[in-house]
Amino acid sequence: QKRKKMIGQIQAIVDIEQDTLRLISHVIARPCGGRLEEISLRISQSGTPRDHLWVNGRRWKDEGDHAAEWLSRQVECSCRLVRIVGEAHEKQSSTLQCRADHAIPSFANAGAGLLIVNTASVEALNTRLLQARRPGFPVSSSRFRPNMVLAGGRAFAEDSWSTLNIEDGVKLRVERPCERCELVCIPQNEENWTHSSRPDCGADRVQAVKHAPARERLSSTEPLATLGKFRRAREGGGRILFGVIASLDPSPRSAALRVRVGQRVDALPYMSTIQV
Image 1 (cartoon, rainbow, N blue to C red):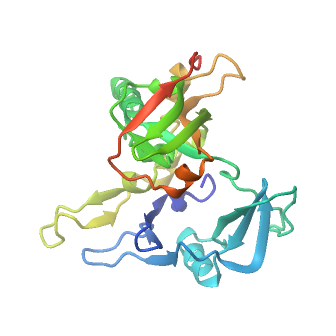
Image 2: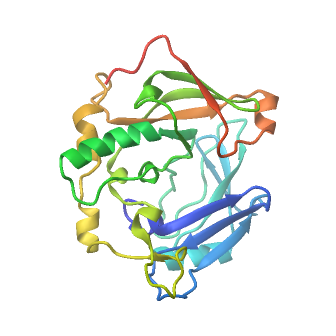
């Protein structure tokens, strides 16, 4: 996404009950009533065996030409859509090369767990951004690309989390803080969408808009610059930390359960906290 900013304008909606993954493109602004381009994929389908990738001990499969053509059209470059479909029991390396530059592909989230963001921490960051009168802010939680957003705690309480016990029995183990890079300076999906005020569009119609010329939107150093002023780790080269990475407890009970919006989460602390 650092090279192809349009990826941030593709909305992903997972519907477990309907077994579908919907990808909705907000790349191109359309007049009122215009239909946004989208594609639906079955979650239970594991792609085709034509292309196999082994990256960081995980097996990936290609989602096929139809998905590749749709995605390539949205981001204006040749690309493929792949998914994790299994774990490797022995060390293997990828044998598939990128079609564009003949390089071995890599994945930003290969081997990563669940990225969790605390809304209170986002609000604390926004307070600093607003006090500094930074343009184009506040930012939303989506700017940090989380898998899960938790609300109801104090700001930066996640620095001391060790375990998250979710209602109905799901348990997550907090592995480490999340190191942030300039990717958080690129607006993500709904930050570039707006609800139209035209009466013939309806209150709930969402349209893609451009708030500023592309060079202005993409040259911002915020919110990373502000985070760097108060969220640098004292050890490890001054990394900028925001959010935490967690993994699912390997117990059969946790693996069989689902997490739903609105469930209660109890956070258990470490004996010591992350020093920033």
